[in-house]
Image 1 (cartoon, rainbow, N blue to C red):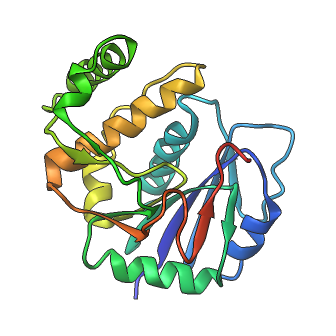
Image 2: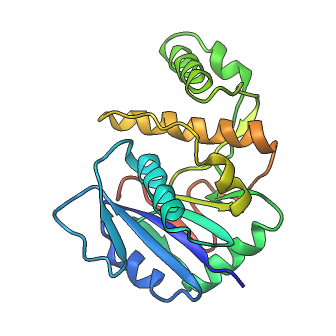
Length: 219
């Protein structure tokens, strides 16, 4: 059986996360670090420039995977401010099972879809989403197909087939943390365009499942 790979965006350095990841079997962990003040993760760690927050980390990790020719079954993209509610092997084995049914999974159900009415919203909200859609279509060359589900960047699982396709999806670069959601939108739109409706979740609650709790920027 091929191993799974986990890309961790290193920022908060929650030792609880790294100690749980060390329990995993048949797994390679790659940490992409945007901070030079700490890199004692116990895993292969790359300190690289911040070119797009968490999704920028993930793209940098995907480049490492490609350059090293790492073979894997499923790929996971995670933050390091999560709370494991069960053994890490139970969590990721369950996630692997779910990826037999879906091509992309998240932890807690975001309970929302990006719909056409989102772009017709009056005022700044609608204008922001119209700008994001225009950027995605220009940067990626795809047409945004609505509606689509999205997965928070805290915990994303995807198949090797999806990895091969999304290596080229665009990242919004810049030093404004709000731009991270532009890349989240781009990822979700890219998935819908290439694979249709294929997103599942480990739990039904926002940011939560029986296996994992997602914190928000370390809080």
